[in-house]
View 1 (cartoon, rainbow, N blue to C red):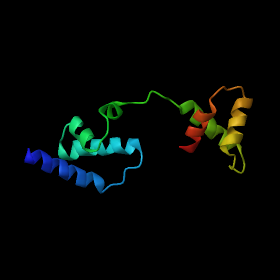
View 2: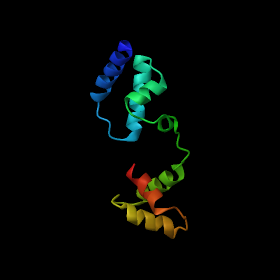
View 3: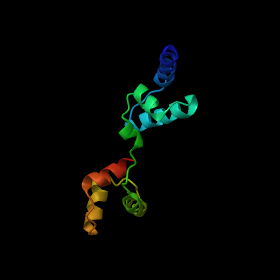
View 4: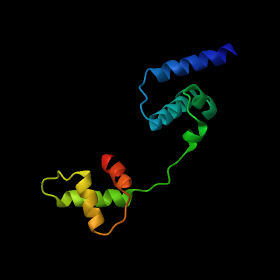
Length: 109
């Protein structure tokens, strides 16, 4: 029991030295703990307070067509200062029915 607590304490000290801002980064922290300290997925997730379902989640979203279209529109512009609203208007003018929030999230990334 003491060995388990000591290992948990060591994992927390190791993880707390790094700043975690987004959920994806906490998943990376769990992977780091699993590989560096050879602990189970359940234990690593429990230490950093990450649900196992979030650790196992894999996005099925494929935004490559949106990214390609945004890159194409930006490369056509001479000054490259077209904002997200202008790009969205051009995409809609071409008849592509993508959601505004989808274009915005891929434009930010």
